[in-house]
Length: 297
Ligand SMILES: NC(=O)c1ccc[n+]([C@@H]2O[C@H](COP(=O)([O-])OP(=O)(O)OC[C@H]3O[C@@H](n4cnc5c(N)ncnc54)[C@H](OP(=O)(O)O)[C@@H]3O)[C@@H](O)[C@H]2O)c1
Image (cartoon, rainbow, N blue to C red):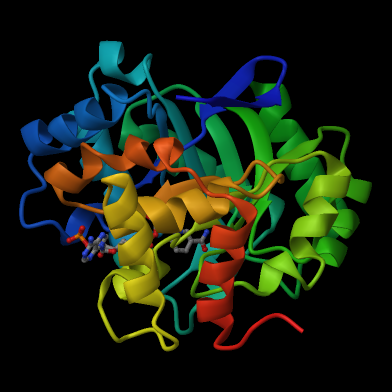
């Protein structure tokens, strides 16, 4: 498995396992969660993506119950904060909102550490750009989080370039990634400057919902014969269509780290095959053409 360098001391596996849907699985037992992590580790997938809000603020606890000290030391844990929805510990809030205040970030970090039973988060992301973000306050809070040792590195998610520049301008610590939606269902970042900006920053992005949350894997849900095109490439190379969709992201020079969300053990066990898919320029453009619904101009 390839590794991506985020800081001098922190590297991630090229493919990341996402835990948004962890609580949706019929089996959330410690043994089953551990089996999923072990299936990742067998392929060299060591990076696990969490967020405080996943599973109505419950997914971190599900992971925490499954972690042994030995297992924790074999993985990198990403988590996020900043979304406050009226659920779980925020059940009394009137409206879903964002909170990037220093007090909220500090409290979220402490909740995440406690729920996962760990003493350090490897990467903390601000989950969404907050229209009320006071960049000086948020930036100082992120610097302080790293300084405190509770967080090894910080980054953002769903930020546009101007959101990134504003926050970074108020920080000493470098932001190390932006986790954004990217897939053959969501190709805008390839041309709207978002990906180009991250390349210019020398930052490898993480791609959420790389299979479009499963839409790409259901024949007929994406127009333009995309599923059939993915299946044809998959058949020729002896892999499944999902591996081809992921390989399409991996082929981009920005060093995209796809964050895979399957709960199915048998799918987890083959996530690494995406790295073996050959994706030449014409195959890449053929899939892109299907995604766009027309050939490139
Ligand atoms: N930063 C953000 O704002 C943000 C937003 C969304 C997600 N994320 C992160 O990204 C991760 C991945 O998101 P995602 O779960 O939407 O990713 P995804 O990998 O695009 O989609 C996973 C879904 O696709 C289904 N699927 C996968 N392979 C399939 C197949 N061959 N046939 C049918 N269905 C298939 C899975 O069902 P099975 O479980 O049955 O395989 C699952 O429901 C999340 O866990 C989270 O960590 C971040």
